[in-house]
Image (cartoon, rainbow, N blue to C red; front, side):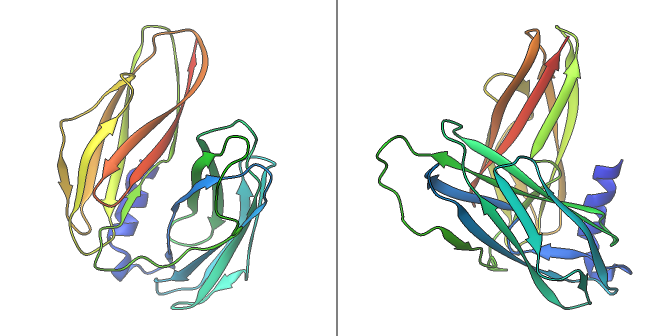
Length: 236
């Protein structure tokens, strides 16, 4: 229910009576990076609601990254930035990291994901270690998912129904070409189109076939970009 309410809030942000934050990008692909470099990432955002938003806390999901915000109180129409210092872990590729921002606004929690590939030894990669994440063109499609990290727990042989929601914050239609679940989940047929402001529920039936704790990645392929979704399964 919280997930559904979050997306309804995004859909009706133009008439929101509380503050709502919009980020330049919440799903950031760093491409090929080196585990020997610490990357500095600057993510701008703004308050598109009608009341001020207080930033309460910001957390990362591992010791390999630190995050902070430039100011705590964001007035309506005002902008600020999040800064992230991230050092990739050697051998963890592809990687997926999350930054969680807690607020007192219409949406209480925002998640920003970092993803990419850690280069092998003697890589040929860009030497620039600073990323200023630009605002996307309003004329493009802008996909936003309810979750970028899924956690499923159950018994061996269970099939878990997990609803995933996608909305389009851009102006042109978003095309979902394919959802690669590596055979670990059933979903609907593709391609699918998501119009501006529309919310599409993607039904996932996740199969728990082996006992233990596992981590994997699904890939949602769209006409704008490919989106990695982390899956953790805990099978008793």
